[in-house]
Amino acid sequence: MGLFITLEGPEGSGKTTHARLLADWLSEAGYDVLTTREPGGTRIGDVVRTLLLDPVYSGIRPETEFLLFSAARAQIVGEVIRPHLEKGGIVVCDRFADSSVAYQGYGRRLDQAAVRTITAFATGSLLPDLTLCLDLPVAEGFRRKQHGGLEGPDRLEQEQLEFHERVRQGYLALARAESGRWVTLDAARPIPEVQEEIRSRVSDRLATRVGASKVPV
Image (cartoon, rainbow, N blue to C red; front, top):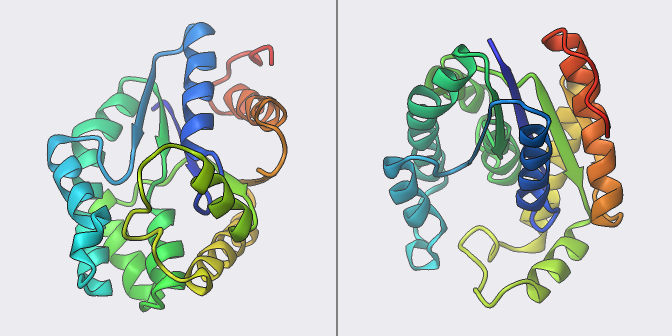
């Protein structure tokens, strides 16, 4: 089995940027790296992503939202993530199942036991080896979003700040509860500084997980 790394955190915390930088660094070091994202990453998942994030579908019920995320997740695990891990590769994923616990469990206040049970079914109980939580105050995350790109906010980004505060606190609670898997990073720092810490953490995990020597940061 390879190494499964996920990046989680509130809106605007830099997950996509850091996932790309991390994957590039690992590829340059000679690792077989696959990058993907949630929702999406497959033809089916990309269709579901459009439906879930388009503001025109504002009437989606929380339960429906969660089940659609789970359907896309089942597809990407079976089609993309697990096959790459089974051949010994590294997967770097921008969001994964913990997002549903944070967004639908804490944010939407759905029953967390049900969220976890359905998520385990959708993923075949697959868990990341390392989850990097890029923590950032909600207001700062949305300030960054306003200055980046020309696209307007997606359906989830349009939620009230109280919703996103619950999501952030959900992530922090998850990180506290499973400190062996989670690493919480201060994402308010400059990108190079955050990326350097990410690489250091990943290098340590590679050395213990796959018996490889540490990758120079």
